[in-house]
Image 1 (cartoon, rainbow over the protein chains, first blue to last red):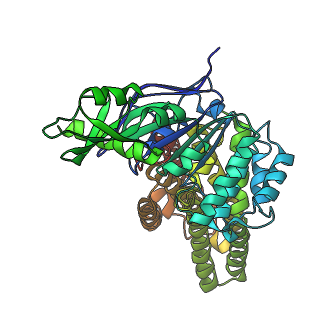
Image 2: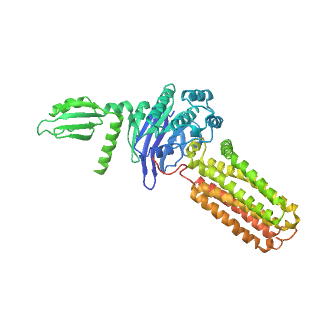
Image 3: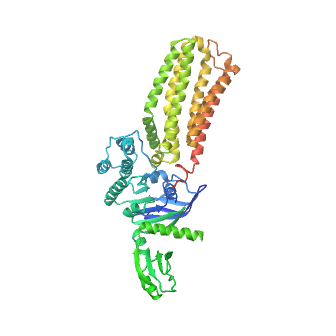
Length: 298
Length: 228
């Protein structure tokens, strides 16, 4: 039995000024993956390939056991999709959208839809054009969730929301996800959003996947070591150092392969470890991107 | 082909175009009424109004149903549904035709009925049929261009080209000997030249629609180019 909901193997797509290259991505069933990248990194292109909306030039994509884009219609029957650039029909009500989708999805759950409407504070009889941006995002989420999809794909759903609306949407989403068991791919350039709901993290930059791991593993293995070197001392060579900051005798090392033994190794090499700082996902992402770009330009 | 999805999408387009459809039928009825008043002036004005209403409804439905999906960013919502792009294309072509053709058929049939009921303009029958079908050719041209290019600019260009073509085709048809000979007569005549003109138009309609299907079936991007 295939326990992967999404599997990309060597996927490439070329545009005039951008290319997605050799993407390998695996999303185990039941996991929540945060897909992080700067604007223009290739998140939306990757997701559009996943949805069968853009055809890859090379490589294979399987979603819920279906080959994409050939079997996209069958695959999309089990996918709930919300993207930042997706709009509902402004002239129609939320109830109209529910009625439109109900006969399409065999697992459509009207009771759940109405419960979500209440939880999201949405009025089904209100026209979409009368809703705020935050309410529209919630309406789109409702329509995706009430399909009871096996895979939920959220492409920057919180982009463009003001901080209050963003927290509301995330809060509601987390509350909904807490009582659900489904596979989710959540893309964003906002690491805080992703960190809150994901258990797996994948970084993408300039069309390439640069790192992918469990969220906890990321947070465990990335550290900043603040050292004090003796006069004429040199920065110790440690495994996984991606960035050396600080100055002179007070270097700051960023490593992606931290182990407690590193502290004693530094001491053995004559350096004093003043502090070992944990890093936020945002700091990890930025350090990851910088180190990769520096390697490429070196 | 998932026909139940195609049907659902067509009903959706009808729903959003319902006001335009009703207004078009009302405009068509008024125009036909003017034609029926009698006299050369009202006949001419009514005919111009009829053509205008038909061109308007064809432009409105194509702009709303095809280009509107992209412009209003509802295309990602539609394409997230369990459909292929070919099914989407099918729904758009059939949907637009099913909105336009009943209206067009009513207007053309009404116009022909007026001609049949007025012996003094019987000679116009063949010309009216050919020009009526020419308007359908225009609509199919707009649908095909809008679907393939997904560009408002190109769709408007196709509309302008189509409207110019009406005048050009009208001029040419009115000067084909097999048609022009009896045009001002008081008997309905249908000669081989009229059949050839009609078959040419029908072939053009088929070519435009099949061409749009063919190009769309080879499309590798259903939303748009790289944006993030």
